[in-house]
Length: 293
Ligand SMILES: NC(=O)c1ccc[n+]([C@@H]2O[C@H](COP(=O)([O-])OP(=O)(O)OC[C@H]3O[C@@H](n4cnc5c(N)ncnc54)[C@H](O)[C@@H]3O)[C@@H](O)[C@H]2O)c1
Ligand SMILES: O=C(O)C(=O)C[C@]1(C(=O)O)C=C[C@@H](O)C=C1
Image 1 (tube, rainbow, N blue to C red):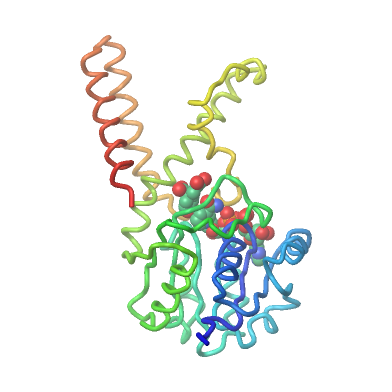
Image 2 (cartoon, rainbow, N blue to C red):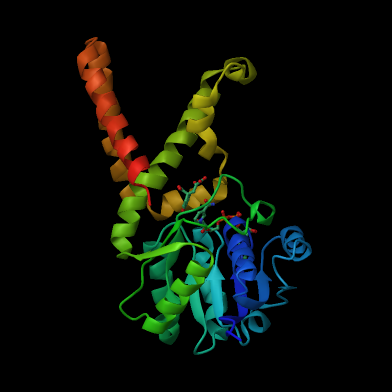
């Protein structure tokens, strides 16, 4: 009989991401017992009833006792407080990993709080998700075929990285490694900027009309595609934008330059220049779709 990789898994923040990790590992027969640590009693009760977790933690000490692996899957703004709470109860061989969308802030919190257990910390980020949140939205196949980026520290134990990779692979994901700073720069461009643009567009429309129903009555699928991610959790995106604000502000400044350049082209009625920009943009997107793996 093959050995089950995890005897006890602890999920802190049993929402879309933590819940989906639990469901995927259970489906893969990779875990025996799952304990959830939560903020809202209602969400935790639902997680228990859905069979996503086996137990709601009474307190951090009992939750962490004999844990093989802890996944932090709450909004990144909660990382400091959670690390402060879990650090005193960590056992020497428990792996701690996370799913946060930003990495420098999370790694800094780990350096501040995990002390001798820093070697057990494997920072991670699944590039998979949705605009819905809460355990109700969790799915066992959320990570199938998706990338997971690990940003291990120089102190991280190799076997902890290996184990975390194996677990994400058991969820169906493709695991890569990256430097923390590179991660935050890249994700500012491909995830954080698009989200802030989608929120900004909806907010701009909200501010620009007294009659939103009338304005949006004939909005079509293009509008739906562009604004889907503006339905995402405001709390989660507040935390991400603040945590990665340096890289995000750089992207926003460049994006404003792009808009200004398009404004000038339009002012000049320069159809040739407009078509050139659109062609380059389309080509890049088509190549990405073709090569996506
Ligand atoms: N949603 C996405 O698309 C996506 C993708 C990749 C990574 N992430 C990251 O994963 C994490 C979770 O995102 P999500 O989409 O699952 O959010 P979510 O809102 O669905 O779940 C987060 C859960 O954490 C709980 N929580 C909040 N504060 C807590 C605390 N102090 N202690 C314990 N539980 C607490 C909330 O009650 C909620 O159930 C975030 O850090 C986010 O940046 C999200
Ligand atoms: O599909 C979505 O709704 C997402 O926003 C997922 C998405 C993204 O692609 O930007 C959001 C945040 C993450 O940290 C990773 C993935």
